[in-house]
Amino acid sequence: MRHLLVVLSVCLLVTDLAQAQTPIQIQETTTRHGPETGSLLIIGGGGATPEIWSRFTELAGGKEKARIVVITAAAGDSAALNPTPLELIKRETGIQRVTLLHTNSLEEANSERFVAPLREATGVYFVGGRQWRIADRYLNTLTHRALQQVLERGGVIAGTSAGATIQGSFLWRGDTRGAHILIGDHTQGLAFLKNSAIDQHLLRRNRQFDLVHFIANAPELIGIGLDEATAIVVQRDLLEVVGRSYVAIYDHDTLVGKRTENHVEDEKEIYTVSNGPFILLSQGQKYDLAKRSVVAAPARASSTTNQK
Image (cartoon, rainbow, N blue to C red; front, side, top):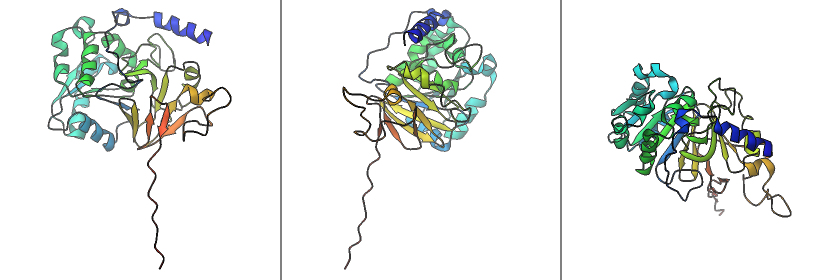
């Protein structure tokens, strides 16, 4: 444990100009992980399903009222001239007021003119690519603060692949040398989902065990791994799965056993302890991030047949 903390401390000191800026001020909340207001839609990559796009549209205020800002930093500077993400959102959601936001300049990211579209946005969508690029351009900037304010107004922040991982507080796979380096030269995310580390393309790329050791030694964090075409909606501390595949939850108590003085509490709460290193959730299942437990589905009413 001490060795890991030393490694993390060193990683946090390896910062670029964006990370060296004065951190933005975020109001304290009563929630443990999720936003106090607004919603997060975190997508595991590989394309979104109609159900995911429907939730995005709903959370953004409906196709007639929604104003969406698409942030393309993760895809590199060539994305500034690529209309594909805007066309995708318009086609899949019916929302027509969609604006592209892109810069590679910290000075511009700290300007009121640049963040103006975010002042009116009801939803934001981060495209995929490399998550460290988003950190380089927006971490601790006026843009970062304006994104927080989208949530504070009750809007939605969505993202796929790299746009999913950047929403965590600890930036997983954030090294500029490649995504195979789990803890790299960028370790600070935008922290829309507080005290968390987020992975994506989970089963498709055989990543389901990558967060295990890290979360086992970081009890304050929640680990979340999302497979492709699968998302979570987070409102306050309630997480719900939407999509075709699975979401893995990595919790310290699940990994090491939730202990009291005398025994492991593995029978008092349904679904809270796994025989493996993570819990898998599928479409419609919910998880309480504050209590670190699966929300049991309501019991079905049993039908009885009257015998005469």
